[in-house]
Amino acid sequence: MKFNYTCSDCGQRYPIQPELTVCPSCREKQIPDQPLQGVLEVKLDGEADRNFEISDLLPVPPQFFPSIPVGGTPLWQPLNLRRDLGFENLYIKDDGLNPTCSLKDRASYLVSAFAAQHGINEIVLASTGNAGSSMAGIGAAAGQKVTLFLPATAPEAKLVQALQYGATVHRVDGSYDLAYDLALTYCQRFGGMSRSTAYNPMTLEGKKTVSLEIFQQLMGAPDFVFVSTGDGCILSGVYKGFRDLHHLGLIDEIPSVVSVQAAGSDALYRAHQSGLFEARATQTIADSICVDVPRNGRHALNQLRSYGGRIITVTDSEIMTAQSRLSRSTGLFSEPAGATAFAGLLKIKAELPPSARIVILVTGNGLKDIATASRGITVPERTIQNLNDIN
Ligand SMILES: *Cc1c(COP(=O)(O)O)cnc(C)c1O
Image (cartoon, rainbow, N blue to C red; front, side):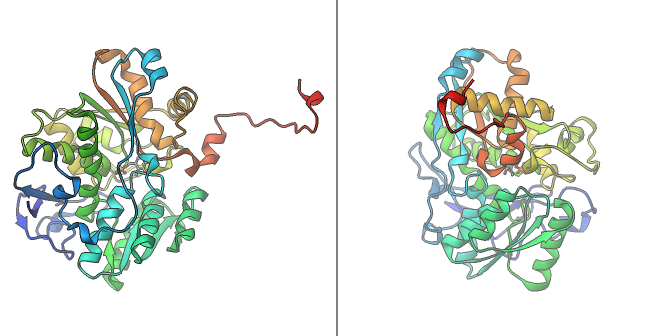
């Protein structure tokens, strides 16, 4: 298999090298507070049959992979939900079961391998929380230094996780968007490989493995995949996996992807309607998808348009309802952003055929943000010492 970079805006091809983060000619057109111009994609050329190894379709050789088991998460059949919702072919892909408990590990894994391949020992990024705790954990497995810019508002568990893994954490008094800019400036000044989302093509490429696995687990493509969306990098990664499979002749059609945003952070949704990205201060309980400027927005929007995908929004209260319904009917406790995809399914379920093969991508574990989850439950106030006290 041969690999190179192709600019998703102008189509220019480049050899894969760590110095290239976005297309050098398209970056000239970058406007502040707008999604990235010139996002680079990995293009593959070659052949593969249905029994491919996932590593065959990745642009970094396996000897550089860190020694930590990322991916290979279960795709399972939630029987209660199937019965309650009337979808006989409903599946959950639980990516909260990755080593640091979110889908972000797929990107961190490939970035770590890419850095190792090129002898780079420091990885720098901004994160709303999960990308940072993920890179910290995967970097620890690889023996790499991780420098993280994290908004001070990030859920405590994600901060503690990153520090436990030994990352250097700069807490940012401001939004994720400020953290993103600081991380890029740090890299330009002090070096290191950037892993900020979409700014390193390996983030998108690493996330594609979730679609390759779904294909292998289902022995074919699903009809619908529900994906929660902030920056739009997971969305593009999901598409990239299916596009690679299509390119290799292993599937006939790209599945319908349904992108689900929080109503309080819906920049991609609004751009899909209007054609324009308008930066707006955002707020949602789903911290992992709370972004003012979706960094991978242009790329994600192009994918949605090219492949007839759909984008919808759900309110915070719909997200909380979905979170507890998922917990109570399946035993899967997901963080709010992880349950957002499911909230999307609940919202448009009447429009889908009962026999459709539907995959809900659950992107993060519930223990990452117990403060928000606590708002959806009632903790008993009274403590007891004796069974006679129960009534
Ligand atoms: C990062 C993240 C998302 C959204 O991914 P984007 O690439 O920003 O759209 C969704 N859910 C969880 C749990 C995440 O950590």
